[in-house]
Image 1: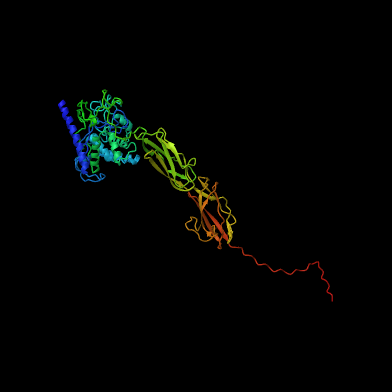
Image 2: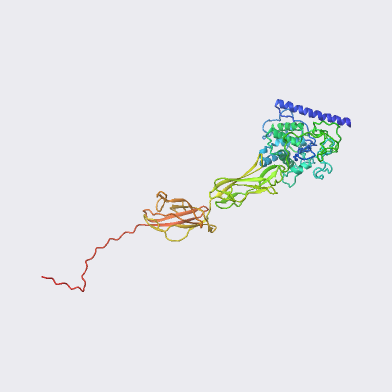
Length: 591
């Protein structure tokens, strides 16, 4: 048995050495980097996206559990090029089971929405899934994407692996003594407790479900404001999954391989990996990594994740009780994603932002901040800013306000009060430092409205040709039977009551220069909804004319204007001779 174990160890060491050599050779030739083979039954608990500060796992998401070191072919997959155009067939190693592939792509889309600056490629998830579990054991998942049977790594009991005592009561891994890496992306339970996601909407965060696990891995890789399009950040992300240079080289090899082209294969038809990074326990039946652990060689190679000296006992659950060398120091600058690291900013249910000029908006802008684990982030400052020329401001007359998130991660801006100018504007919410997250909301201010307008009296409006109308036209606008102040009114001389045809003859207004105009805009009702029109003049033609007034909101009224010709003046009658009075006596005429 001891000889058999030594042979297995030598095979594992030889495979790792060959893998490293192949990676170097491929890099020199610019061929796709060599990577691990499919599905590691033992999986790396570190890969599951645990808080890198967690004790007992050397800061790795998978607890630095074993992984598969099989490498991709030294040639590119069929039909090289963008993997957005997947060939229908190709080399077996390039095939990814349909449900597994769908989960990786869904995770990429989700992260692109909540953390677009991370630029997570689904091929990175595929590369890690390949190394950790061989794409869930070749795609052995049910219709919901849950691995069947479960995928469990070996017990992390300090015998060849890290010592991580049970943290979940066996809830995820069925082991109430020691933790095990769980699921297609090989999370250890303590990692899953922090980073677990419900990506398929079934109300459960299940590390054995590829949709949940892929999203959790994506969020973990993006922690601490990483930009995975930057090589250094990508290396940090992968090393935070499993702190091993060989692991990084292997994952990068598969990433490069998948980026050159992949194709979809039926679930259960994926190729299976063969070479673990360390000798795994006997695997009973189809459940990889679930068998009892075996004692490894007394001198495991320190270069392999499973063969590193046990962590110092000063770390909780992190090694044997005998004095051992401290684990390697994490790469310089490797970030630690504590629970309060800013992760994403999302809409917390803000509806359409619309209001009438001068009114308050019914909706208030609300956002929710999440930490790098996807949990609500409390006490995070969020800056809300109004941009635009409508005159809209937050209550209190401010264009910018800062609000801290509550316990549920939600921050709600103060009430918005629309300005007097109709038009569009934006409200921007910004949070986070380094690479701030930003959400922008479009908003609209509509003109004040009136659904009815009527004259305030019923006097007949008459003018003599060439004169002004003696009585002014006064109207009152209302909206839902209430006075409508500040409503824009347009007055137009028309030929028909519907206002289809404008009239270029008859009564008119005067502009500032004293020239006749027959349409007035920019008129506005007062605080009581009333409007008194400027003087109306009558031109030379007598007749009945129409004036139509309309409001924003559909109110309208037609007013009749009558122009009469000037009255003709009657000629004066000549004076008749004065008759003598009857009492007068004619005087005698002197001779």
